[in-house]
Length: 190
Image (cartoon, rainbow, N blue to C red; front, side, top):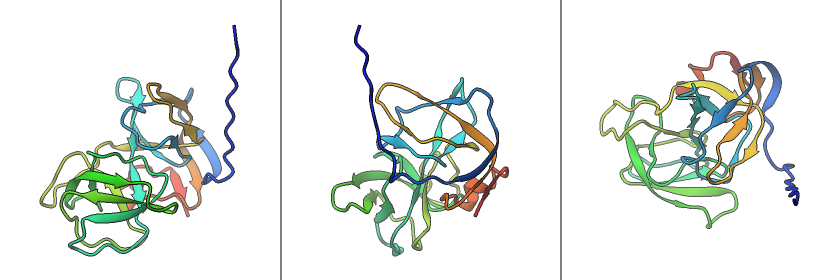
């Protein structure tokens, strides 16, 4: 029987937790089949368990101003969005599907193409996964936020991730839009 040891250096990964106070006992399992990218970052927002499995509330930070008619949005690398996800700029706004994600043009950002323009989005705004397409002001979060990931872990295809989920704690620089932060009131982000 052979033993396999895998190493991964995480010196460039953001560490957002300053203090961890209360978590979900025993940790949680996170569904990876719906995630883009190869890493679940510390500070990612999780939903309440659904049949024992939590889902990631996908968030991407916008790195350049977006005009009202633009269908392309530049977002910081490290998001978990995938082609086909519905995205919105804020809850109660428009939501449309992602038609393409260009990850090769830049080392600093990914370019996300959306089927229809969402409207103007300021730099440091957000793209947030929505439940369904919305041409009016009826968009909503796909999953209701409950906790925050305390330890970043690599995503392996076909395997769910077991990780710690924090209900109460202090984070610094964690990208949390207001429509997400209002559900996780135990997390103080500054």
